[in-house]
Image (cartoon, rainbow, N blue to C red; front, side, top):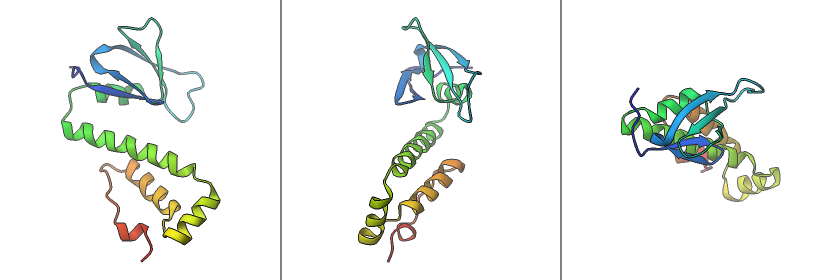
Amino acid sequence: MEIKPDRMIHLGYGKYWRSDAIVGLMPIEDDRGPGRRTEVYTATLDHPIIASRSERAILEDMAIASDEQFKIQEAREILSDLVDALEEIPDVLRRVLLTEARFDVEAWVRRLREAVRSNLPAVPEQNDLFGS
C-alpha cells in the first residue's frame, strides 16, 4: 500500500494527523462498542493516539486515492458532524425554528443521516426542508 504524503488524516474526536507520520494502527478490541476505535502510532509521539475511526477507514484515507474520493469522505465527515450538532438543539428551540423560520431540524437530521449512509453525498432540495 502506498501512502500519499502530506495528507491530513481525520482521526475523529477533532484530531488530524499527517499521513506520512502515521507508522502503525492497532484496532481496540476491548469495549469497542458499536463504533470503531483505533490506536494510532506516530513517528513523533511515544504513546498512541486514540482515534474514533476504524483502522480500515484511516488506511483508506492514507492510501493514494483520487481527490474526488477524498472530498467525498470529507463531505461525509462534515455531514456527520453537522448531524451531531443538530441533534444537540433543545426541543424548545426546535419548535421555535419550525414555527418561526419553517426550519425542520428533524427533516434535516433524517436527510443528512441518509446522505452519510449513501454512496454519494446528497444535495437536499431546499424546498423539501423549508416550508413554502
